[in-house]
Length: 259
Length: 299
Image (cartoon, rainbow over all chains, first blue to last red; front, side, top):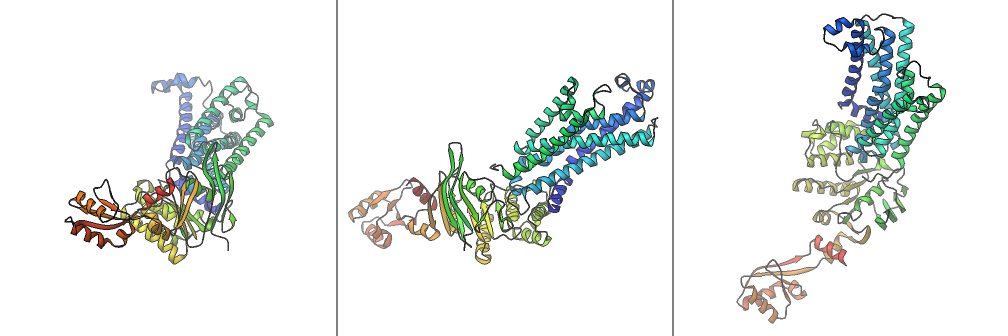
């Protein structure tokens, strides 16, 4: 397992993709900070030519609860896209670049390689979440947002972490799609479908029965009036995560690799 | 002792299409076995089944008597359907990745194989910038990295220049002769197969239509005496008058398949000189492997 992890980490380290995903999350934290800056003083924002009118649509105050909620919501929606791309890249690249054939007849079992990929995906997504939180704390402090308390920040960070963990679990079927579809595009297709249906089903009020809507419910993206996902929703997320890992591992182990 | 490779009634069907049909063969230790066939004959499918990448529809594959799932892969090196490498990793890093996955951690093996495959100048270059020939060398380096006892190479000479082809030929021969490595290769470069293999299996439409030792190719290939002369018509008349059976070729020569012409070309020369049309060229030629292969397949 250590050897497989070493190789996956080396491949990720040498790629530009981790930097792209880090930039995406940095931009997300920055955009949240920009909204807070605008909300702090809309007159000042207008005079600087910023989008004061649009920012005010948030209808919220510029404080720590609002900013931390924004970070959690960013993790729910942006995370599905960015974490999904991490999975698509880790698995789909082996097929798109035809390197998979060098991973199939080795003393290192195929399932070990698949598990190493999932571990690296998890570590990668964890690093992105830590980056988002740290950057958020720095930006929030720089803006001197009101409403700071250790409990509130701990609760806000916990919501971000829970949302990120659930989003990570929900990307495992994307890894399976990139493997079974032998390339990037099938993975991207499944990811876009999951994001689309998550929005629609959550808007219809059935989000807690659709796993990909659950992180948005947890992060409060659907609104304060929506029902919390409940135990069923959380179990569905866990179930999807496990099924994705098992399906990918079984597919790598058993499917004919004839391309 | 079990053969290194044992294929028994191996078949692979894709719907109605039989990619490989009822193929049985054994390869013994130290042999260089060549799979020879046209494109789509079933060579790569056979190699993928050998490597456990494709499950046979029926039949069995065994390496040293052992099933290929999970398979004794620490003892096997392979290159299938052209080289592939991680483009953003250097040559050394690609080999390090391959070494770690083959439970071979020593950097020494990586350095050795880089030197052996003449990749030293490219060691720190990213694999994505390599020429096709050097990418092929990198693919071969990965296959040889852990000093395998069995080497399975699908079209190993692809993309290499003539010097590179000769280099790989001598490398494979050395591995087989000096280290007892068993080699299975497929190639469309027929002259390479003839020069390198100790045994050849001819595959056509997924079936093993003929299996022969390297020596048999020479023995079974047809021979003929090729004659050139300034006055070809007069030479032909003279040879017919002397009881030979010359045949005109599209190349503007006369071919004689008679045993007495092949065994004693000097007699043919005497006939032609006596008739006043001395030969400008007189040579015994043999079917090349391509002609031989097509004859085998057509029959």
